[in-house]
Image (tube, rainbow over all chains, first blue to last red; front, side, top):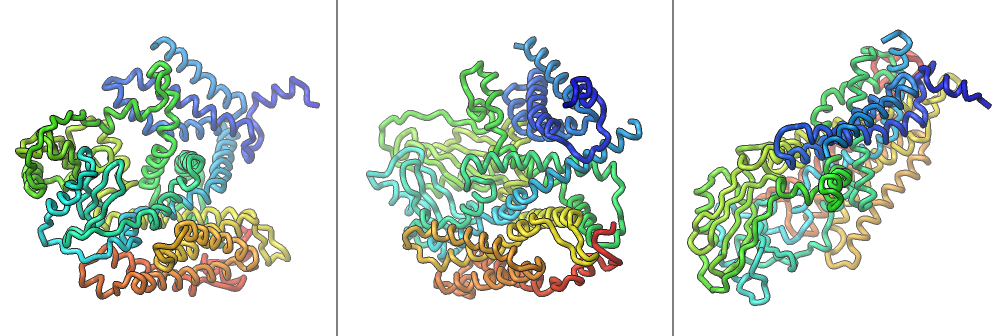
Length: 102
Length: 527
């Protein structure tokens, strides 16, 4: 059994080999990226000038692309901790902003 | 970035690209393959239907009123929101009159004769289109293909990053290197249009459904449907006009058409909508496409002229640029995907680019298979089972599709369960190629057989069409039925090309190495 200290150490240091991606990173990239882009695009929606419905159309057009890009960004994080942070910190900032807006 | 992190980054990037690539390769190949047929959907739609096999005379003035009035004066026919599709709309030579509650009626515009609507019994083009975007497996297929599109965008961006970060070999000496080079070079050529097409593909399948949480948030929990929210921007509805219940004589449609053409000569009128017909408040909506402003109209943005049917006065004139910028942006992104109203050369060019993408996917898979191959006795490569499966899917689909085209005119149109039989035989043929590709030890031999069979079937298809429809090639040419004849010629040429490729493919174990790389010097696994 691996001790808690070892698990924590494995979590925060970059792995030796990038040849495997692992379930944690994969799931985090797929679902974490979805949440990050959704909230990020919503922030852009409220910040940008112009007719609101026009911006909604732009949101629906491009959010799949931004999802793919942010999934790529998250999956390439050097360590498991940084991958998690790449999800949590943007979500935190965007949710703060959105809660202020409405 | 420090040294170890860059190496980790590159390894991870390659691993993510490869694993997602292999996972999505077959799905994307299906989308691209059936998409190539979907580009020519208007032509196939006309080719497959006996009701569209009549002489086309473009110079003669069409007498709309005599045809339309006989239909509308029928007391059972509804008087409001009658849709009329003019000949030439989506390459269809027939005049079509339809309404929400009535089966579409099809007329030969030159003779005024009514054609029999075999719509329920002839769904070849519809089936190919459904296979293209996953609708054949209803909502699950559409969502799956939508997610495939998102994954492909991940692959495209990842692939471009790989080109920046990893120095690939330019002149490798074996098959593996050739496959890698072909995969990279072909995709460099096609990545930009492919990206735009995939983006709109994802938008159509998963875009609106996935934005439901946003709709819920914006409407404070009331509505879940984004399309209902943005409808005023994308497809604004005209306010319905109450009928005054006063019978007035209507101006003839030909006169109204001439007036519409005077108001906006750039507009190709394609559809008419008759509102409150024979009433004092009657009006006609002329909807169409403006070929002088490509990329900006055709899908959500359809320029419209509304004229009063009593005195031809202009009620509304909505031009291409009168809409908001988001609609213009949407239509410009959709343009390369739906290719609405473009000339045949652009369509052929885009389908050629998609053919190159199909090859690039195949070469990516073959490169991976070479990497995974285990070599016995230093001579005999043994490939992963995925290779046989992808052989059946990528190449076996060709004879199955050729069979589909043959069955269209072989099976009688009044046969019971005609469409079920046609589709069932298609899928069974495709599955049979799966068994055959495992049975045949040499994949190259199996490919030769599949391509040869597909070639023969594609060559036979136009002849079955000629015999069954009663129109020979010469008849089609003389009677100006060009869209139908062009499909026959294309099928024949396609069959010929497949036969030639089948003849040229290598068979024995040593020859493939030289086939793919003239500089071959040694085993396939050496890089």
